[in-house]
Image 1 (tube, each protein chain N blue to C red):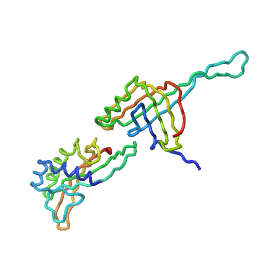
Image 2 (cartoon, each protein chain N blue to C red):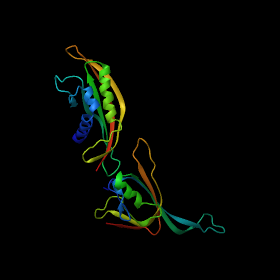
Image 3 (cartoon, chains in turn orange, brown):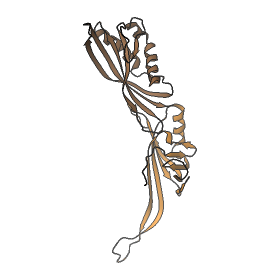
Image 4 (cartoon, rainbow over the protein chains, first blue to last red):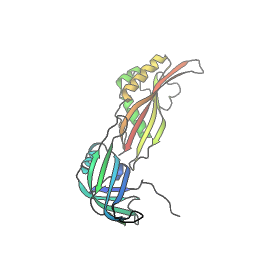
Length: 133
Length: 135
């Protein structure tokens, strides 16, 4: 019987910086453009596929001190690198996803009585490679 | 957690104004004062909280009760509490193995009791939220 899993073992790395130690949420969207090729007396819309696209949104707790400085610098807008995601961790046989990505935006909202977070939006720039460890 | 107890104790014992309200004696007790302990004194104890389980890195959100106890008056117990508050609210605690990023008072309490010997005793204190991550 298969069982589900949580994100507690997830491995997240961008370039050379591992980001999973403080991560809270990681969003994910992959999509493809569709071109309408319906014509004439077609009773239904018909599409052909075009370009693929994707992005991920990461929210982490901002580490204090130099660790936070390093993480902040690693995800400066415009930074490009390999985004490696392992939803269940990196044990043999677990899924892995690689893609070249660009940091589209980052934000560090502050709240007086809550822990500081860092949000990062990654825009895919290339094909996603899915595999296993 | 013993490391938190140590940090709180070290913070309180370093407070010269608090020590003055206690008559210059180190009357700061973990959980309960010894039988026959001279009033006034301080008692601190964990009263809630635990792991937050919000990231791989371990975070804890703990609530500790710290109070002044006096057999003189509620006012005297309140004076001890005020010195505790001055030391703990917004304090930077040094907890071995953990990084503390929040130490704030979030509750006040006051009550009294009459001992079997007929002595009135006042307890005035606060609850303090301590949030920290494992380093």
